[in-house]
Image 1 (spheres, rainbow, N blue to C red):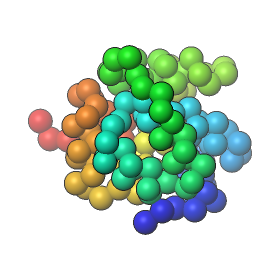
Image 2: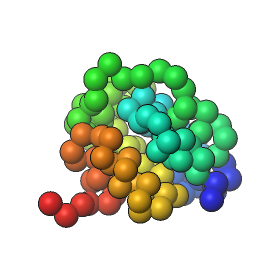
Image 3: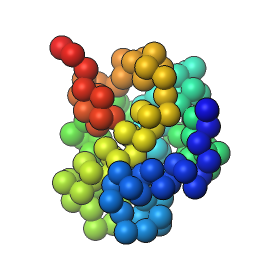
Image 4: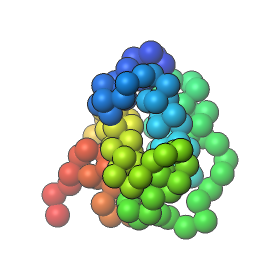
Length: 131
């Protein structure tokens, strides 16, 4: 089920404890652009299908990552794209957005998404996996 923009951004705002929707939107745009550069195929399309159109288009942007970023580098990349962010605040941003994305996915799609990403992303999505 696709979330409406209002509902998606409100979930991100609440989860990230942002003072405004603009802050939540900025985090969502950066995190989803970076995530989209790491996902491919049907699973990427399924993640996009659960997002509001504006965010789905960001996720589906044809830019591809040159190499997969491990979770720590993903957080650093997020910090580099959000003005004034630190690694600590970027980790918060990433987790706020990706946990809302995880809520929109069924368990099987989330499992396949996590298989496309380097180990450790399960924590960023707020869904720790058993070893």
